[in-house]
Image (spheres, rainbow, N blue to C red):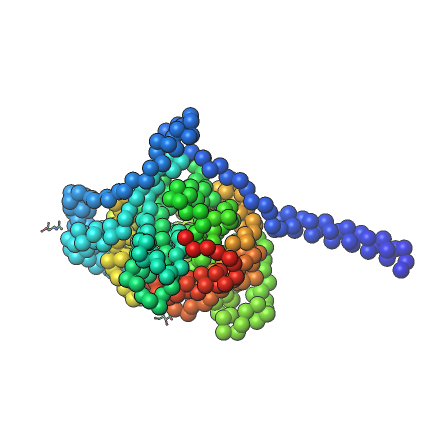
Amino acid sequence: MSSITRILLILLAIGGGLVYNQLQQLWGDVPPPTLDAQQWWGKDASPKDYDVYLASTSKVLESRLVYPKSTIDELRQQLNRTLRLTPPLNGVGFRYGFNSDYLKELVAYWRDDYLPRWREREEFLWQFNHFTTEIQGLSTHFLHLKVKDEDKVGKQHYALLLLHGWPGSVREFYEFSHLLHQTKLDPTNKYIFDVIVPSLPGYGWSQGSARTGLGPAQMTVILHNLMLRLGYNKFFIHGGDVGTIVGSHMATLYPENVLGFHSNMCTNLSPKSQVKAWLANLWPSLFVSKELEDFFFPKAKEASFMIEESGYFHLQATKPDTIGSALSNNPVGLAAYILEKFSTWTNASYRALPDGGLTQRYTLDALFDNVMIYYLTNSITTSQRLYAESYSNAQRALNLERVPTAVPTGCARFKGDLMQFLDIQLQDKFKNLIHSTYYRRGGHFAALEGPKVLYDDFIEFVKKVERKFNIKTL
Ligand SMILES: *[C@@H]1O[C@H](CO)[C@@H](O)[C@H](O)[C@H]1NC(C)=O
Ligand SMILES: *[C@@H]1O[C@H](CO)[C@@H](O)[C@H](O)[C@H]1NC(C)=O
């Protein structure tokens, strides 16, 4: 080798090393940040003595929230005003957004069918025990289904935290919770769960922050405090939508408490994962079997779908309070804004239908239960602020997407969902991705749309965790 070649090689090695180093800084793994478990989000000044505060407010109160008749009557009257809607374009279905002809029908249903039966809906909603407890200055609401001692006999008994998303609520999990918490003992079913279903801070009956900065990472801290307060040191997590982000952060920040993380929308939005997806797009068959290619590719199609469908996202990430004022003062608009998502995110082809296919996979009662939760708690604005907090510089600086977690992870993919991630993308983050499944039927709201399919998938995941890891029942 001539000395020139040698020098060139050395320079190349140094150059390569530098490039590698730069890339690692851009996209390598990073260690987990430490978050303050006592960070204060309340309206009032933070307590001087946190131990005194904890002793006085950490009680869990049973809360059965019954709304006065006047609240429901007032809503009926609001829905009885002449609707100022613009007729839809001919044959447009849901492609320009919620079809206003169908919206008129739905408002009539809401006013004349659903609301007169509100007591019955209320009984349905309160069929599980609702609780509130104050955490870090915020009143936090949750459902808590506890297994009775006699029902545990002969069963594998674990705790499970269920995390809903936007524009959903605890209502997404009612049917799913029944399956998890079967009290009618089915001898073939080995599993039974204590189920804890919080309303995320700022959602439903959980108070929203009075201060900026309560993003998904900080929600994780609050919910971790909740689980510890309830006495659960080891638990499974399942989440969808925003709940999947919070669940993933929980598995990342508190791996010692999480037995397994299961999601119906596993994501990894790190720069490295994005690059991988677009490279895989060049030669899909190298990364996924032929019959599953259409879940992921072509990426350009998925990207253009995301642009068409993510206008709400940009609004909420930048000016949540403006859109919030429009929706808080207008129940008709609120219903349209929320329910449009239950159409398109369930199945993009429903955009062609005059009724958005809303009743193909859901009952109107279930959909309006969810709308009612937003309406009664006036939480649309606080729920939307989560998007602004998710994309703040402070949240991004935590770099949680790049912190790997060893918690066993299971990912169920439903074809109708908004985005799909390949195993090779998810594995950067989830080092123990032990369960990865595909469903041709179903979309973004899997728990509400197909509770039994999701339940079976979740149980398969739990069995794998039991086989590979040494976990203890409660
Ligand atoms: C709606 O308005 C009509 C006409 O003003 C009235 O007859 C009806 O009772 C109202 N319905 C409700 C639910 O308020
Ligand atoms: C979407 O709806 C169409 C028409 O009903 C159906 O053929 C397709 O399987 C659905 N897709 C999903 C993901 O459910």
